[in-house]
Structures are given as structure tokens and as C-alpha cells.
Image (cartoon, rainbow, N blue to C red):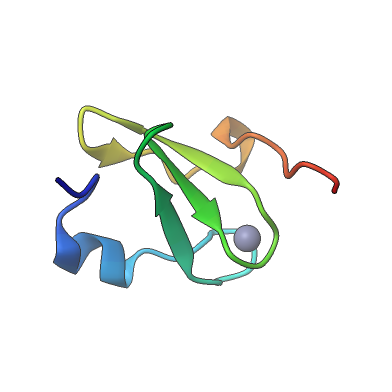
Length: 59
Ligand SMILES: [Zn+2]
């Protein structure tokens, strides 16, 4: 089962850089494909706030 409604996930972008997001279903997070910030999803509601996001991990 997908983390988010398909239509919803299609319109969501990273608020920091407007990049696409990929779903991390195991961690219930949306991960920005550009900056790597991770946005939590709570009860199916993505929390698209930069100050709520986990910072990107340096690799
Ligand atoms: Zn981003």
C-alpha cells in the first residue's frame, strides 16, 4: 500500500527547492530527490514544513 494517495503524491514537491519527492514507505517519510530532506507523514498527512523536515544526510 502506498504511503500517500497517488494524486496527492504527484502534486507534492519539496518546499525548499520544488523538487520531486520519493516515498520511503518503511520510514513513513517523503524524501526529496534533490536536497535529500525527509518530510514525515503522519496518519497519511505529509508534513511539508522545512523546519519539520529531517536534514539531509551527507554521504
Ligand atoms: Zn528539496
